[in-house]
Length: 217
Length: 164
Image (cartoon, rainbow over all chains, first blue to last red; front, top):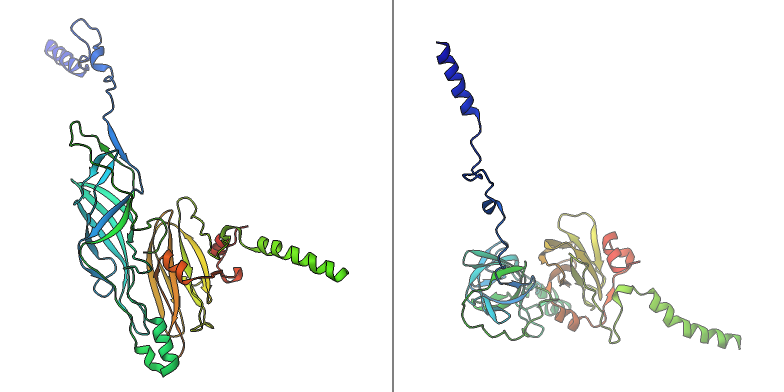
């Protein structure tokens, strides 16, 4: 009986002993090859797209100061490919979303309709490319950010003909599908350089149709 | 002779004194165009302006943050001011006797946006109306802009527009 108890105690003690280290080989030497950090491989070549890189997008829905509402999301599309050092990193045609920040329809007394939009992101094979700085491309003094402003006409009419000027309305602004606009990338984006990708695309021509740095929406 | 010398001294000193009194950050260009400073790092800014003209000239266009009690500033005819802001959406409102108008902008880091205030016709008095604008419109329509007086600005706006 005593031997049975002793055998059970010894078996329990053996079970509590931690197992032999797997890092020892058959002669007890440490296996240094497995412990050593992997040799630093050459970093994969990457292309870096700086933050605030100007891009050209197209609005893919009909929007307007009268038909849109604040907060509404709308589809956008990259209209021109984004190229770094001759390599296309974002192809034209990838889609994303924008958002209506402010929409107000035209009103009495010549008040123009107003529309403020924002570019939110592009989706590139499941990767989200955040955007900022939506700007309509201006054509002279006009901008799609607001409609025809008849405030002056209304004021003059009121001065000449009385309250009838109050009933002169302003114009709404309409953005048709396919309308081009400027935007910028929000963050620094890093792209792996393809090992044997297509021939480098030509660098895009400098953007001249808008001033994305300092203008109203 | 003393009067002549005094007149010459005043004539020489006046332009220097007037230049020194102008806000350093908004030096006027030779053609009357203002030089808009870049916003501070990490910030964006909005330039509010109101063109001159007879309509509603006696009325002010007081600009508020939506929900705020204290105004940011008040635009008289032909005046402007610059508001420095954190990036992100921000809503503004203008109030008049009959109604109020609001505008929401997406303020972007490092960029200047433009907002124009107009006084439009109302039943009993003019109604202030703000809307998005562009630098092109500001430069074109606002030939001789003047900065809003310092005592007509909130403390934060004053620090931006009258540094030092």
